[in-house]
Length: 125
Image (tube, rainbow, N blue to C red; front, side, top):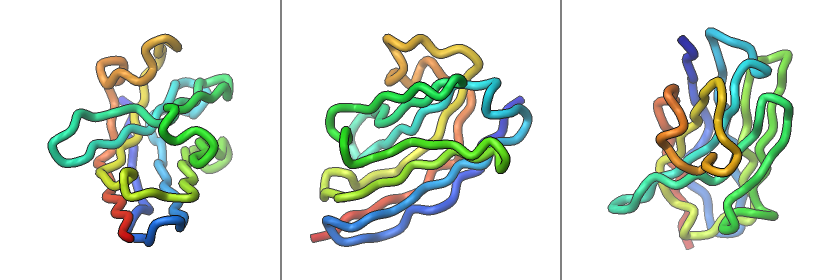
């Protein structure tokens, strides 16, 4: 069973940066596909970034060019670097993992069986 332990997040002014971390236990990074999701109050959980076990990445249009997903195999840790943050980026952020995620539906929460505990990101003006 894969376990995901999140850290990072917090409050930042619009235009600022934050970095989220997700420590993986129970498997290596090369054994899973990973994604970052976020959920704002009253809204559905949405996928923002995806990285495959082979290192391929893709992003939601709303964060493309501002967010970067990466991983450190030696630390078994997944990251989400968030730059040029906007008010709309506010929400609870989750890392997610599964052994085989279809590229076409990576942004669907139904693709993932393993979730981090979530971390709050608040962007203010």
